[in-house]
Length: 146
Image (cartoon, rainbow, N blue to C red):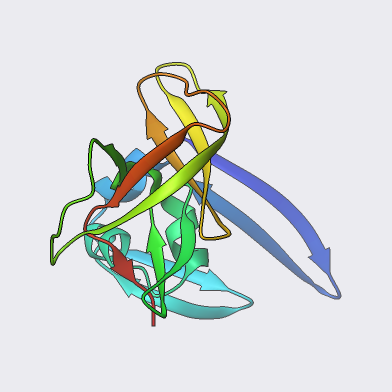
């Protein structure tokens, strides 16, 4: 198990912040997330990953996008955003037109930065994309934050 820690002194108390690797987190039976000395979530890691209560929690697992879709704040991991050939009418997916801003090489994939309706999103793709390219995106089962 990989552990990364940062030690800080605040007043008379010492706090140790520990971030556990993604694989280790998902293999444990229970996960507790503490922020500012308060427990903000306590549950099964897979359920917390699939239904994070807020962006802070989702970001512990992976990069996360927070966008507004149909007047609702939505959290999406980069793997939940896909390029599609044409816009279709699906009740379970949100689809939009977007413009590529940048492509970042991440080793085995590219992290694409795109703009749709003035909102910036990041998603994974097999190849780099040209800046200013017009694309269509599908937001696969999105995670609504409340």
